[in-house]
Amino acid sequence: MYFTDRGIEELTARRGGEDVSVAWLGERLQEFVDLNPEFETPVERLATWLARLDDEDD
Image (cartoon, rainbow, N blue to C red; front, side, top):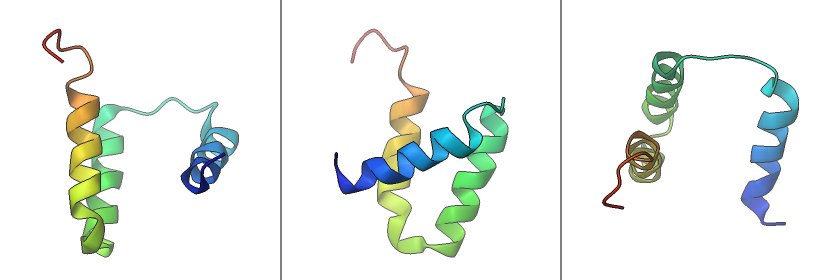
């Protein structure tokens, strides 16, 4: 298990049964970046990756 997997596992365990909108997720990501600007690049990369999951070119 990678160190980052622990956060993913906690998220799944604590909130895995909830339904959230993409708008809600976007707001939480923006809030996180506002509080932690040093993580802007990785959050933007994650958001872009999620946004383009269905693109056939990738």
